[in-house]
Image 1 (cartoon, helix red, strand yellow):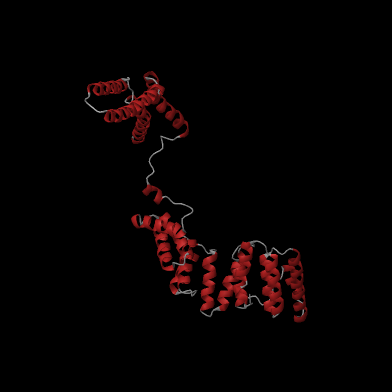
Image 2 (cartoon, one colour):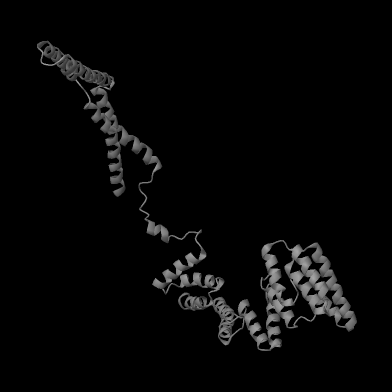
Length: 366
């Protein structure tokens, strides 16, 4: 309703702007009486000269002034004659009164959207925008959760973002609220334990370990919980327990699991991978071999793996096995060379990042 009222006012203003000049023009119309008055004044001057009421000099000056006014009045009559007649002005007024609204509606109705509701500035400012900085969006979610603290979905969205932003204390609180209001789960407990570990500088504290144990109790195959339980065992000096946990993960987990390089690297770090894993056929054939023959067979397998990777260099897990094998065998130069080849061969950014994460614990430069 307000919109149409504004349109009506704007239309009236436009019509007024058209009609005003037409109305003012009528005031300038003249019927010729002004010219007749000046002519009478000239005749009166002549009579005054004849009767001696004024002198010739004064009479001449009066004639000049009246003549100037007479010429101006005559010119004005000519302009008025050239102006539109009253009938034309009336036609123009009718066109303005009817034509302007009709044309305006004809243009607006197909192009405009009068049915849309108002969208005030305050509402636009609160609308999420992908171009806004992440901190602004986080602030909006936090304000929402202050008013709705039991919104489990809101805490579920906020918690991992806070963790990525490095706001670990806030992330811990958000994860706890997520578990309280959105339900418990193995992955949620593992995520909470990971944030607690990050807040402690990478040390698996008793509080963090308790969360990982809760996650493991809910799902014995939860990879993050199991990895950190192995890390807790390593930090406690129980390397055998850590190796057993990580070996179990590798044996039970899928071959393409994204966490395999990290777990393999951790296992190699504690000496849990003294030699590259052998296929079942090779294990059977190696039973009756001497130590030297077995070592030669392993080196041959490593060489074949290196050859295969040169032909198919996109196998990140294969590169990690090769680098780890060289590290375990003490061939650090070959390990560094293999790592350099791997970084050149792996083109995908995500897989390259996976490779770099996997070799962090190998103790190699770069």
